[in-house]
Length: 455
Image (cartoon, rainbow, N blue to C red):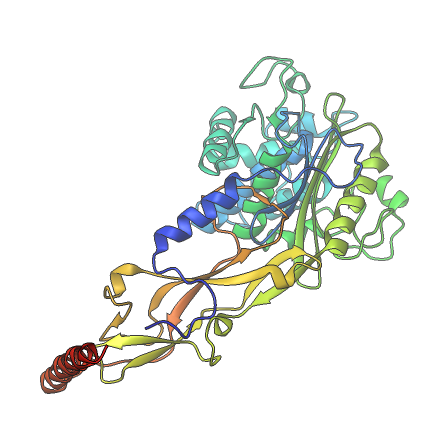
């Protein structure tokens, strides 16, 4: 009945789970380029497919990259309506003193001044302001910084980051809190692997893509306007001017085409680290580099990772119609007013693969068996737009890919749905078809018997 299909087709969504689980557990893709970062990873930002990794599961201090978790919880609270962008945030004397701490990234905060959530979020995301981060943390947790740190670890578990340890919201060493730390020992710092950091960035930009609007700002006046045409060194010398520590943004020292954000970090133990997000030609990549000795190295290493990704991988479109010899995607229907129904993908299926492997991709159509008969027919009635399964792709090449989330999230996959309504046939029509089928079977049996007489 399904001889029209040119490629292998599976009719159970269970196979989809097996397929994705397989891809989530295959051999890791080790670094194909010589990196000096102690730990690194490069990931497709849309699917979580791992393109390159080096020591990606080693637990290291992420320094201010920790603030990505604080950003996530702030944006989640905004989304849930528990706080608002124009809400004012109380500034304690401790937070004010932290904002004036020498050698720490900050904007100055005064207990007698009014600062909104938006003001402090911009200070956190652009300037990497530590005191602003603590103020937002306390606001979200009802004044309890300890409770906020607990929430960070709870959200990390929910995100399935794997190995992690958050002892504060800033990424500073606990000793910077001058005895006011709320978790761990005085010598503790947050700990994340490059893989966990990439997972955090993946959740952040996919759940709250608007955050990149702020993360991509090179320079901005605190509580003021975005700055253009300002010398970056002059900005550093002006406490009211916030210069993004991500020097790969437009106009800064390591400007990189397509750079969208995200977060730098540095402590003595962490060294220089950076999580970057860049987009070119519809492909968005997340990179993480950790524990570098030189400030510039975190950007040159990121450039090497990003260049490798953009230069060696292409986004290929896989079409449902390629499964059908006539190029028209239809599935047989039982007990309907028509005998077949057109189906279509809910959106184009785009698969990121190494250049030259496009022809190795084969479409895989998987239909929910609960919607079909044992003979492979969809059961009428059918509504237009009804989701009946998924379209994915099998890579027949020798390249093996890992995945950030194993089987928890699919690789490249889109829903398949019906493109038209099919009404259930009336009792008489169904009866006549049954009679026709009966006599067809009888005639086939008689014919086979007659053939046997002459063999």
